[in-house]
Length: 394
Ligand code: PLP
Image (cartoon, rainbow, N blue to C red; front, side, top):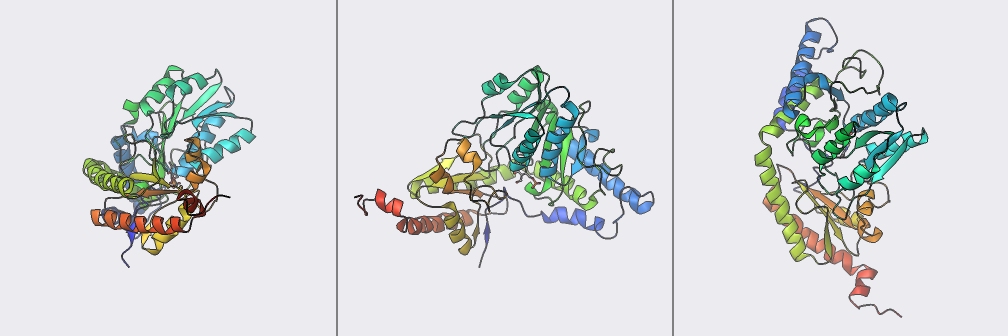
């Protein structure tokens, strides 16, 4: 069976050019970057070069990049590090209601420790209001964190404006750029970002490696204590092949960004227009224009997202219901609920995220399968039958 992968927001396959760059650091050049002999020095050289490359690509300085195990750790570090560094000054944090679980569950932990969180609302397209952001600022606010782009519905937030507001009030501004990095141009200095998390496996790099950018001059507590790695800020033997792959993947993503974005947008737009034309009772979730190029998130009325997911999987098509991290839970998506989507409709949502290796034939095949699947599932749905008048209410 030919398998089709439409779940690039969950993770992307490693680019083979990236693998080639990484391979020597698993084998012949497998030194510990902190060792003083030849192998260690070569490993450290590769890490330094990777750090320089990544910093340049996001408009930062190498000393502002700290490698982590991924986006989750970087999000944790930003929040917990700010709590440790600024907790004496103030206990109030502002984040949005649609942050990733890495942020929301860390916030829940910090609330138990006495910190207070304001969770900004979003409108029906998943957009925060910068007016509400500014109104929420208190004298004891010490952290503002708004994700760059949402992982479920793809809405891109007004990051520059939010960062300006934070700066005006002298509050550190953090953004989770895990979904945006590699797809959108991001220059931390131009955008006024103080801290930012990103993760290589979302742009055809390896899993298990990410970074937290921290503007020089900003204090942040440590999350992982241990050795002297990452200028004593993050202990743990450096994942040298991961770091090398991270830099190689980001370099390719930035060099090919325009071309890939155009290509993926064409696939996505074709998908959206066919679904909206050919399948009744569907709703596109998220912003129509300010959305990630790869993202199409739909709610299908009168059916469960999971049933669609499993039917498509049987047909060889991989998609996601809600975010991969929260699937497995039966709770409807917190993002859709925050956008005001009703619970039943939120249960019927599916995320399709396209990638540079997908083809238009795959898109067309998927729409055809989706049409069949939705029609079949609706035939079995009592709610749909009721709508069609096939079952009369008594
Ligand atoms: N933040 C966002 C917006 C994400 O989409 C994800 C992963 O899906 C993460 C954080 C977590 O990143 P990682 O998988 O690298 O831990």
